[in-house]
Length: 113
Image (cartoon, rainbow, N blue to C red):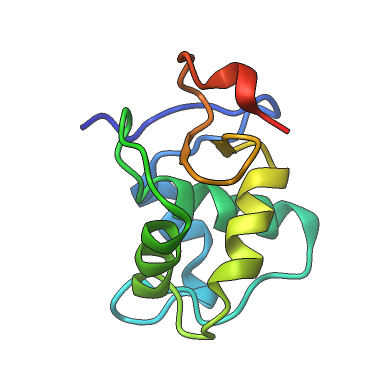
């Protein structure tokens, strides 16, 4: 899977690069130890987490939470899920029943709240 992409602000969002930039926020297993407060670092952390999702996959809210639990240690997947959605890194159906990576264009895209 190619994990390199550039966001609208021109930031390299390749997973290895993100990991290096976030080193102060990651433990030895690559999990977020805290959610950054500064805007740029928060954006990098969210892009790092978004990179853990498979392109083309559809996830229930429970599956999103389970995946996020694997990649952070402060046990707040709901906040991370909402932040990923508000940052437009994840998209979802209006009823919240399915989530997917936002860069995908699909039949579900019209369902975004």
